[in-house]
Image 1 (cartoon, rainbow, N blue to C red):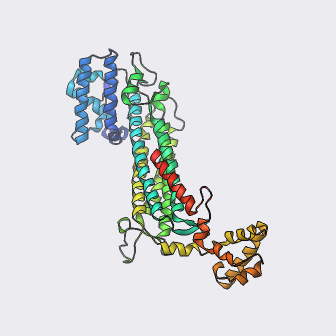
Image 2: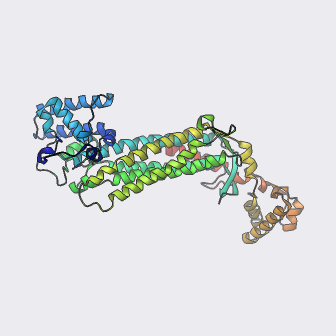
Length: 458
Ligand code: ARG
């Protein structure tokens, strides 16, 4: 008979039991369930609600169960429905009456909310560690390739030369913001619902502040209805995961492009590539593609939970049982993808020559040539037109701006002189941009220092 079976004349059939159970997914929070129960029992004893002997029996009984769960010898039974009843039933089977007193002043509704919050805090902390490792990898690779010039793009068309380090650090800052989002999700989870009982609180003189302290929560949830029905912190976590996956997906899209024959900017390590079963020459960036692809499921999980939560009346509803699988999958996916991305970046070979050759193609010097004229007194709008006409002439002749003679330049404007050559060199163009946040060598060195400091502070 189920632990709640007193008022029932018959049970559900096996399929229906399976359908209603959350045992499989709950196993992820079994350790948290034990921790929550031990804290609850201790507080009950301190408040004189159960005896110290009962609490001692509960505590050692739960410790043994935790060990069995950890070493895989605990006998799970889907007929227990969920982790809370599985553990409570085993406890009472092992220690008798004291076990049957554990649930005093508690409901599975505040119990499950406590377990998920404890788990969510752990998961956020783990993701934050992995986020740091990924950012460290980006800083390392940016440092090692400090003066590699590449084309910067807008609309995926060559725009202006930039340093590869600058490009990689752009991702560093995206992941830095993701860290803040994960940290905010952790803070959202960091509140104690225990003591809310089923929905209304309880008549026992519980000390909620004490379980808050024992469980390491930073605060106690002030409303029992909200305590058992709030899953906002899981939405925060899934949103943080979604945004971070979006950033990874952008990075991986570039890895796919850059490793193509057309770009040839990078060669992925064999350890992060796969072959084809038919085409002997193939070396595919599968892991970058998979990361890009897995972004969809993480977005889906955010949308699934938003939809599950929509229209739920207060307080606990069984719909809430559906809130666990998605976040667990989102966390596992993001965690795996961050590790893969860090590995790909750290082990890739940068084709410096291909990058710098492309940095000068596609008239990437045009802005600087226009600036050259503007700095000699021509209004910028007019300079823009003059250089636009030069580009058109080059296109007709099938050459680049660098192939023009000084006379060609002079024919377009008498303001041009020999020194225009300095404004045609991709590295010179990139390194001239030394305002704060720019791509010039000196600005990127300063940015690297700022990134290193941000990493150390997180
Ligand atoms: N298995 C449930 C869940 O995951 C635990 C809470 C069930 N409470 C209830 N009154 N049925 O949400």
